[in-house]
Amino acid sequence: MDNDFMLQNDTAKRLYHEHAAGQPIIDYHCHLIPRMVAEDYRFKDLTEIWLGGDHYKWRAMRANGVNEKFITGDAPGYEKFTKWAETVPNTMRNPLYHWTHLELQKAFGINKLLKPETAREIYEECTAKLQTPEFSARGLMRKFRVELVCTTDDPADTLEYHQAIRNSGFEIKVLPTWRPDKAMAVDDPAKYNQYISQLEKTSGKSIASFQDLMDVLAQRHDFFASMGCKLSDHGLETFYAEDYTEEDLRNIFAKVRSGKQATREEILKFKSGMMFLFGVMDYEKGWAQQFHIGAIRDNNSRMFRQLGPDTGYDAIGDFEVARSMSKLLDRLASAGKLGKTIIYNLNPRDNELLVTLSYCYNDGTIPGQMQFGSGWWFLDQKFGMESQMNALSVLGLLSRFVGMLTDSRSFLSYPRHEYFRRILCNLLGKDIEQGELPASELEFIGRMVENISYHNARNYFQF
Image (cartoon, rainbow, N blue to C red; front, side, top):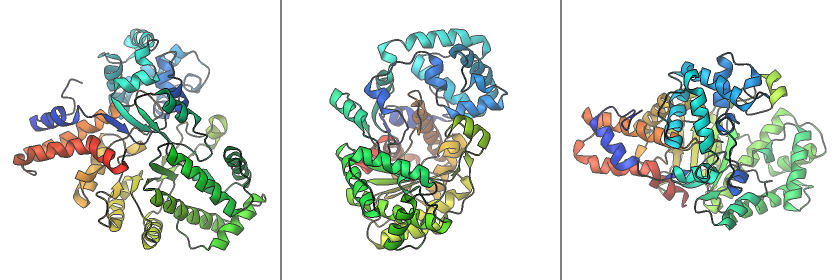
């Protein structure tokens, strides 16, 4: 893992070192906890910052035969870390092997391989550094030259920690992202009504009717905008675009609000209506809407009951995408309300489908209006990133791509931007050296690398 890691020819090296490496980081989609930034959180040890909440690592440890006690259980921190150190050598060819050592190198200056023999010294050195100001939550963001991050936030969130960050004068911007999925999740009346009560508490307004709901969501949307929000986000199995009427939405909301179970047809209608209305709200503010499509979640019901969601039991789903996606985007475009849109795919079989379909809705008003987002979740590794960029390149415009994000809860995940930039430069460097792109245009291609690494995102989201 020297300076030329993953750069397989001289042109790739030049593109990376001269054009990509020096760019700041805009992490426009992540799951950092704003409170930790507001309080400039200090991590007690390497186990907390590395294994806390990281279901990528948890999946690998389970596959390596590690007992849950040492993963999410109550084992002491160092014992958990030793189980991770035993697992790491067995992750070769999994991106975790690269990420682990990139994070050790870039955050802590450690070039040793993590394995049982080195576990103690690495744990002690990193834990000692984590006690210093340079390795606090804010210190790590500075170390990686982060310029801006966008967290993921519910309409019912108060955004008090975003306000605290802003008031503190912290030089790195931490902006909210509007994620209103719970506001349309009428599948479970009890959970939905509990959520509506939370929304009432945050907004200070009663929600007795569908119109009340939309009024409160509009108010919260305005508040998010006042806090610098520029993006929305949806985490969905697929798109929703059933036919519905306004009366349908009013009646379905009233039914669920009274505690009655909606039918499957009613659930799909309600979600379809809400998706359209959310798209209109985002368009009118000039926000970009993001769709993370294709995860089948909480597959292990026993472990879901034990640990809850987001604990490593999700997978790639095989949902039908094209028809509903086309119908939703067409509905928004026909109303003149389709704005900037990013679609992240989880099933690689759909890469070409999503590029070609999304590009039907570019209207020539915004460069890169319709984006095929970077490799997501199970696909944010070398093969997945190359597949995403290859599909985008041959069917769209790679040059307009807004680039990488961490999608992470960890303050150590920023080397994923470097990982992506190295893969991008190697991809383009190979094409140039094989004569498939003109070497005479190396400066233009270098600017393209700079744009994908940084400038495209800054301009697209108007940060």
